[in-house]
Image (cartoon, rainbow, N blue to C red; front, top):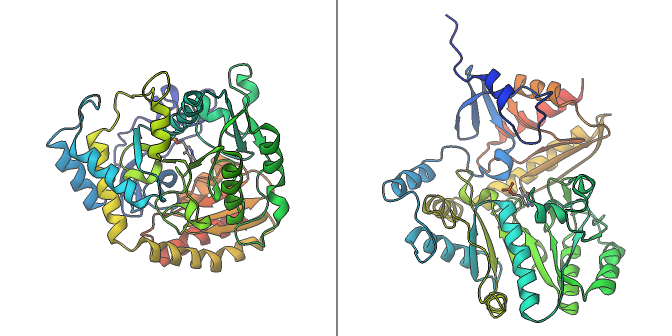
Length: 426
Ligand SMILES: *Cc1c(COP(=O)(O)O)cnc(C)c1O
């Protein structure tokens, strides 16, 4: 007997926008009914090994008992209460943990709704900081190939080509872009790599409120893994010129690169740090912008007398409770060993893929594996091929990349790399 499909795919195609999709030529979406551990289950019962962690977020796998229990437990008390004039245990407990695990000096937390909003908040903090100091600094310095989100300010510091600045010209503020670092994470450091950023800083530092960058891993803008010394030099230059440093750890935070935060690869502490994505282990949207008390106090010493931001769902108790549970798992489950063994396995298995004709380069760091091709993939056909192979991998452009949940087993990880090999070898 044919099982009746209940998800109305036709309605979806005609009426629902998915990320970066056309309503004229929508690509088919795969109907998912369940996700558990490292498996995503399609409506027809097909089980896929997840290679994406739902865009960096589901680090402990789906439907984790500890996270689900935390959500249910909090739901019985209150799903939400306003954060203006009210505080609650889930927020206090989460912020205590965040202050204790983030790089030294970051001790003042602003809870926001999504990664992009955390970036907006960081940029606003930097602007208010200089305003309070009586200096007019309205420019940000950032890197080509960066990605910081899809809202307008976040987009303005995202790679101008990738985020189509030309489409919104006249509306998106124009900031200063330095060449992206060329030295790979595992390569020998070349001091020339920092020249362009150093030159731009020397020239424009009096107008620059902050440098914003993704530490070590440039994610959606190209999956580029750069040298820790680059980041160390940026910190030194920021100190020298008195410019704030904003580290966008939204993709890299919570262990993904082999350190709890990617800044630790360079042993630096930013002035402002954004986290999101894996913060709730992939359960719900929540982000945080964390800064030093001295920066926060300066912000609040200005004309406004406070930081001018306050989203409706700020500090959502349900999200905070799940985030706290997520950090508890990180504390207890030896994520570092898991990520290190994933890294070792990628180092063994990706070089074989690099021998294929279609492949330009492979690279890896922590629980991130990247295969860069010479030509862009055909999304519809490659997506189907991956599903047929029993894996969920979603490439973009010339990049096939995996960032599986840390709980993935060696056998499951091999299924991912073998599927990529097989499909690229046709
Ligand atoms: C995903 C991402 C963002 C945006 O986060 P959203 O939750 O999608 O708004 C910002 N910065 C980086 C580095 C990201 O990877």
